[in-house]
Image (cartoon, rainbow, N blue to C red; front, side):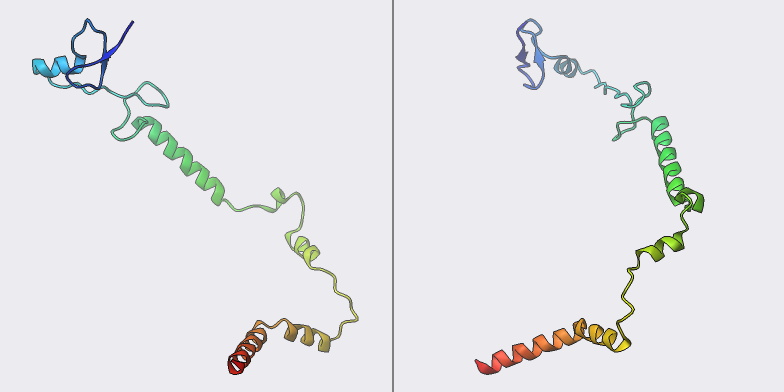
Length: 134
């Protein structure tokens, strides 16, 4: 079977015996256009809403499912779902053990060495020194 494009619209394919496509024949006779009803892609029973691919019933059901999922996500976690782990004790285990021989003075020195403000000041001073040398 050989198909050709409709000579009038050049969009639809027809057999050579037909002459024109069904749409062009309807237009030439002056009949109103019949819009084909698209069925819902989910249930394939009801017509789809304009601009959507699902019917009203399936859309409501999908929205209800989304609401249920949101409610489930918002429910607080109870301690039994954690498998018997006390959340506070689990946090204590994350903190590393530090040697006891580090004194307060050494902590302050470490803190000063890691101060971002001091590093920025040093870099600014170095940049000033380089500019003065040029």
